Amino acid sequence: MGLMDEAVDAFETEVKNLQLNAKDAWDQLSADYSGALYDTILTTKLGKVIGWAQKNALWPATFGLACCAIEMMAMANSRWDAARFGAEVFRASPRQADLMIVSGRVSQKMAPVLKRIYQQMPEPKWVIAMGACSSCGGIFNNYAIVQGVDRVVPVDVYVPGCPPGPEALIYGIIKLQEKIMNDAGTERAKQRVA
Image (cartoon, rainbow, N blue to C red; front, side, top):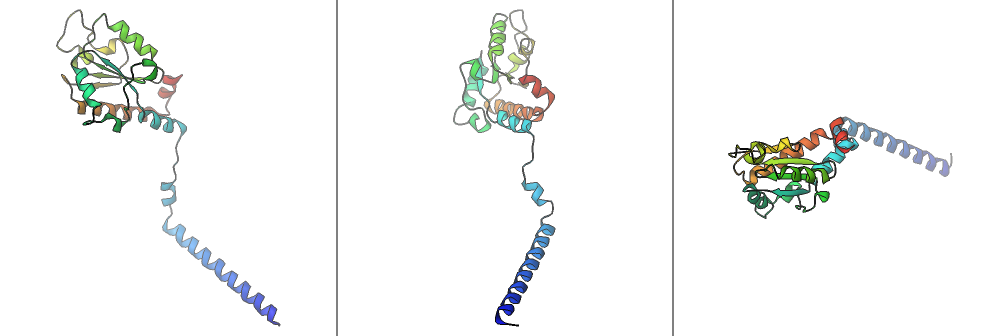
């Protein structure tokens, strides 16, 4: 056996040792982290991704009708900063909004205007009834006031109070975001877009 044969044998032995060491290390790694790899891989459906995007990018349309509108404006100020929760900028045009916050009493004359603005909003769209007046008519139990905005447009979240504070409205937005995520990828979400 020559010098070349000895070098080849030594090289083959070293390669086999490296292969065995690599196999042992891989077996140990897979034993230590079995299941942990699954927890780090993002597995989802497209509907859930769309729901996540929708819940974190709400564009509210202002429909301030009375006292509650002041609290709604305060929610957008720096102290409460609704942008942290995805409700970034209030839109003046219904065609640029997907969330209508009805704050205050709705008169019978205002109801058709409210419905028309709601119809102009692109799908998917949501409505928050802010305050006692928009939720159930409030203290105005008479012929001139709509006894709940849900008689005119479908309401997703009710925020109680007279008037509710900015923190209550932010809590309502968080509840709406939870509803959007729960509906994501379901038939209900598909019907809203179709």
